[in-house]
Image (tube, rainbow, N blue to C red; front, side, top):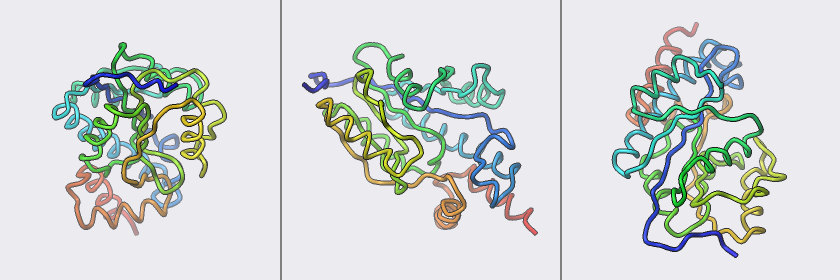
Length: 234
């Protein structure tokens, strides 16, 4: 049986998952291309652009905005960013990504859908937020696919069954397929947004540079960070 709640609408929450932008701990897969300090600068820019887009979605779509820190004691930059954008600051619990996403979904009030994003897709188009919000009206789960087999956004109309993420491999080419299979097994309806890209490794960074060379306004803080890295390159 589908867990989809009938009704004309649902109030949605938008939860941004973020790690502190600390050199040597943030975006380490980018370090071979830009160094650990450069990777941390990009992580900080990704956070700023993602939160700016999320705040715009909050203001235009009537969402509740939350910033979920990977550390129990949030890094000062996360505190400042949350304050600047009027976001509720929360701490992610222990566990794998599935456990942490389920906790974020369960934290909502009854009848509140939840959209969850990380900060790895700072150029995600703002219209995608609206499409994800609308998808919660008719589907139990919404996914924003990425080319590497994962997803940059996950939404849930209601709390998910405890077994939903059981067996889902994280950061794997089959992450999205396993999530879709889990939804099918539980009778949940899934909506897919148009694919977008996230930025994990050097190949993704090249795509990001090409994108922002054409439309820097899509992620202005990331554009500035890349310009700074370019200026400092030998």
